[in-house]
Length: 136
Image (cartoon, rainbow, N blue to C red):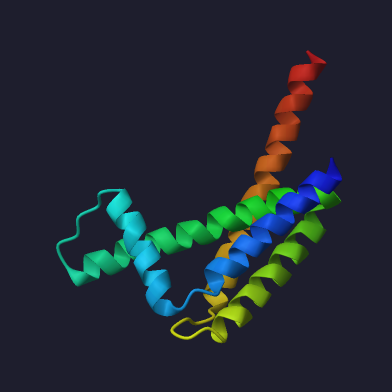
């Protein structure tokens, strides 16, 4: 089963690299596409920028939640999950520094770590619930 998790992790990391490799203009149009898909109408540039920020940061937390779960399923050690998420987040932000129109932000690394922490919490909670259900 761990081989499957490793393959899934590799696919997620390739997707992450692909999204991070999009230049600023493409990345912005993708965020705008999500806004359109959600049928969110904005009345000002400021409002549009705020919604886009929420979409982008939610994407960070979500993808790193998935990465965290997959690392946890492979390694089964929360300390190493956080180290793995941290290293992947740092390399992703460094990669974005080299992409035209993109920037690497330390804040995004912390947001990514939050996604990893949520993954650890969700995994542990699921295990506790499963344990209680099977012990009854």
